[in-house]
Length: 491
Ligand code: ADP
Image 1 (cartoon, helix red, strand yellow):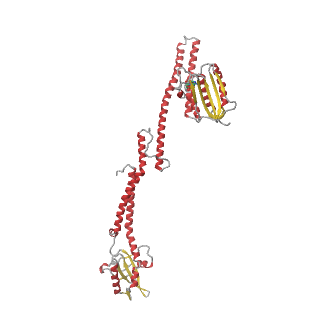
Image 2 (tube, protein in one colour):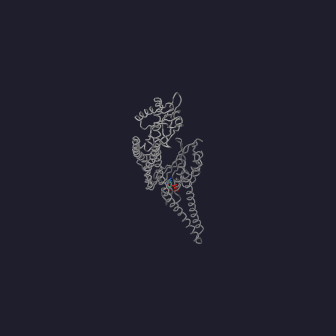
Image 3 (spheres, protein in one colour):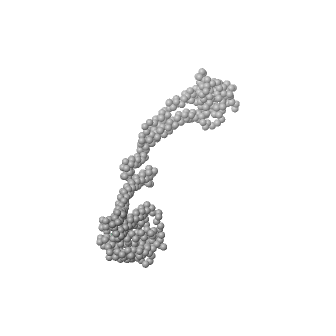
């Protein structure tokens, strides 16, 4: 059997099968229960029939059937209901007289227990008694004792329904109401099926849209979010909630795929940059060491020292680059190692300034501070914040020509502690400003051979981990100012 792939068709098929089973059960039940109901009704309606006849006519005189009275009864009954059969029995149930044709009666006795049950009890269910016309069949009846001065002389036994309606089929076939009822069932079945089809189509319409949307999402290689004609929301029924969640999921998947692609691109770029930046100092190092090896005999001590010193500087540069790369990848991949503590940023700024004073003097720069006297407490990783400030001062010293000024200032405002490092150096072009925080980005790569291009990327990441960000203002050739702020904390 070919079953349609459409959910609505499957549902309507299932509904049709259920309807058929229900109707079948109903018809079977009616087929078996209708005759019982009719018999019960017949018996209840004619319950007092035998008793009334006995009351009206003296059917027995001195234990003998009063033929005249019986004839009168039969004549009267035949007119009213020809389906009725009348039997008169003695006390033991032996049939003494009857209304049926002579050779049609097959039984000589009536079962008296059924007769007594009928006389003694209220009828709650049809009571079947002997059908004298048949050896094994039973029928509903009405019965009453025939008395003479309180002594029972015999019984009047009236079989209701007679020879006709002997089988259920006969009864149903001949019933107009049953035919009408059958047509009603068929018409109701058709109406229910049509209504069911529309209802199921309406209910499954959104599932169909959702399923088409998901198929389209897959066909587009998960790059376009699911676009559905119906708006699904989380406050609706199960289908609505499912649709809304699917839409959100597709948005998220699309963003993740985009992020993955960007990460993949930047990883490729990183590998290319790393290998280039490692290769350059390594090649120089190798070149100077080779020269030393090959020309050691012809070089004097001063030249040897010169070559070794340059080789040492390159190895130092290589070491710095590797440790900065390691530091950045540690910061990018894992932020569990941060240890937050409350400390005074003004004190830290003072200490750093002391540390860099000599280096600044050496280059002919003035390093000044503008730090409040009172402690400016923040809750942060002190080693990492120190790394940020040192990075920025290091850069300021590196990119400010001799005679320039560098200022480190700390101020407290609006529950924030702001730190600014200002220099009067060469400044940064506007077009370069958005890129200086990228890994390996250097404005003048050739001139700045000592830098790695990672310092600002590390600083930016550290501040990100502290829910802060770094800002830069620069003007060529006036100078540059880097600043960041941290939430102040009570000690
Ligand atoms: P580097 O190791 O090259 O200093 P950074 O990431 O620290 O790497 O800085 C990136 C680039 O930003 C530098 O190469 C430099 O061109 C520019 N830059 C950083 N700080 C300053 C500054 N104070 N003045 C001028 N240019 C700067």
